[in-house]
Image 1: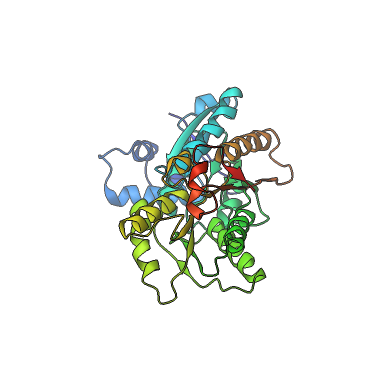
Image 2: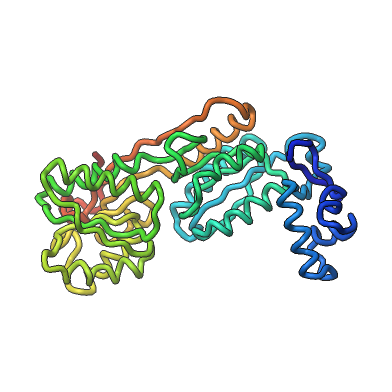
Length: 354
């Protein structure tokens, strides 16, 4: 069985060190690591506390690690059901496959606790590095912890610190400014921002871009509806928007999934998107162009971001002590029918972009 590693100011931490600290035998520690039911709960807890205190990490691939890198990396995403993350994953995989590396994909489901458990498992299996889209609620200290672990990490799509660590993402603020400015120029003065119940950098950047564009025109940015990022929540949001005393005439959704749901909810209430009410999304997932009406949105290039994150991680693995890098992929406004700017007779032609 593989041993472990840790710092604690004295180098490599062994099973014997853990056993001595916990006051048990080495074989008992081994049983705990194998999750054997033969170990009493109280003993298991005592051993687990000792491993944490000593900084011990069980390395399931110790024999492989003695020969060098494992040529594997971890990719942690926060919501695997969103097609946006499928494109991001494909971008990561293309670069890693070309480099002869395998990618282990994990979904944290926006749980910081689950994220910690997955990272621990990936450390145990000796991955060479990690690409992480941080779950909401992740403390900024995680970047430093991973550095202390000696585990190269690239933050993707969301960042825990504006300056600390490597990051690859999209210019969300500019994208939101572009689409908000477009709707204002179409004559809309009451514009809603819809979607997102969680606080993280991607939400903060979108909100900042929305507010900045409206402020330039002396308009209020007070219609903000925080809802889950699902089609159903988007559908249900339509009623809330239409019931407002100062009813908005346009809405920008946090992502395309919410925007498509919102258009369905408006249509169910006899309000035609693109004619009676302008709708725009964010991300430009493949479904956006196939919606009816076709969805105006902001292209955030998830495939390219995935590739950039993977390339950055490979550079960080090769040079663990280099200066932090930040790669920001430009956004593009894709104008289609749902905002009312593209006549129906143009359906089927290539969409315009700004």
